[in-house]
Amino acid sequence: MRRHVTLYGLTFSLPLLIWQVLFFVFPLVFLVALSFWTVKNFAMRPDFDTINWVTMFSRKVFWQAYGTTFVLATAAAALTSILAFPCAYAIAFKLSDNARRWAVFLMVIPFFTSYLVRVYSWQIFLSDAGIINVLLGWIGLGPFHMLNTVGATIIGYLTLCFPLAVLLQLFSLVFIDRTLIEAAHNMRCGRLRTVFAVVIPSARVGLVIAALFCFILSFGDFVSPIYLGGGDPTTLSILITDTTKSGQQWPRAAVIALTMVGTLLAVAFLAVKFAYKGRTK
Image (tube, rainbow, N blue to C red; front, side, top):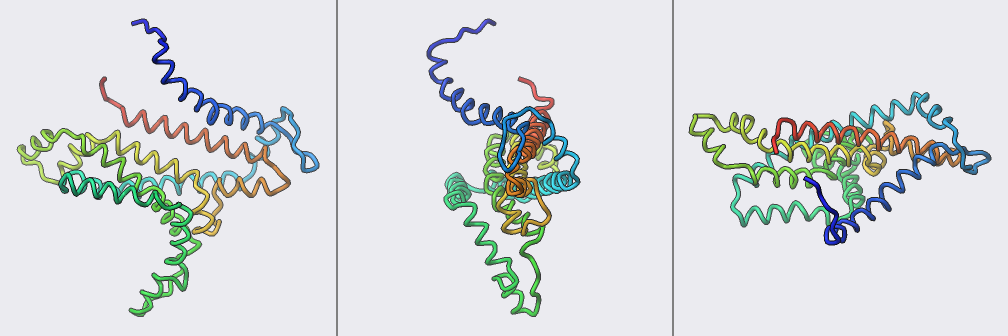
């Protein structure tokens, strides 16, 4: 069927198009161009040289940071999805409509506070003389070193992603056809088996999209790795800041950023393809 562009449709689509061009396409094109510039005497010069790509891709520290970032983001996405699912399931199937509205409201409240403030608050809990170690000391345990560790970084990722994961999973679970669940129960399918055989496949799109958002947010996060993880091990976001401070190497930082963008686009494509696999229009 041939489609015609109308003034009405153009009027509503034009702001979105302008937004995408100004805040995604133009910065991305500039970033690509910047990656080919050169730095001499601490000054950037417009050029077309692949030295920045060759230099960064030949460094062991780059690939170590890339692997660390990918593994941490994958672990955070998996852990957040696993912990969020029981919460979203309980809200969707166990609570009344009024209680469900309050639960959604409580999930939104954390976004009222800056993520940086929430991360700083975790330092009070996780430090060697923090609240958790003080409580453990009352029963004769600890102190345990929790701050500036990989575990603390994961906690920061959970702080960032958990409420969003619950909401995205919830919006998918509430639209599941309840007759499918009733049919499974009529066929003497247990509760746990119903969850894995009916609920999860029916909500696959929402569950995958929630995990994807967790991966994206964790992959590009700078706050948790530096303030809770102590910058060790180095992630790509930390490597970007270190690179810019080393002789004003913004072009090399652009290479790292473009690698991150390319990775996220590839992961997003594969995740969406898997989410809609086997679905008919």
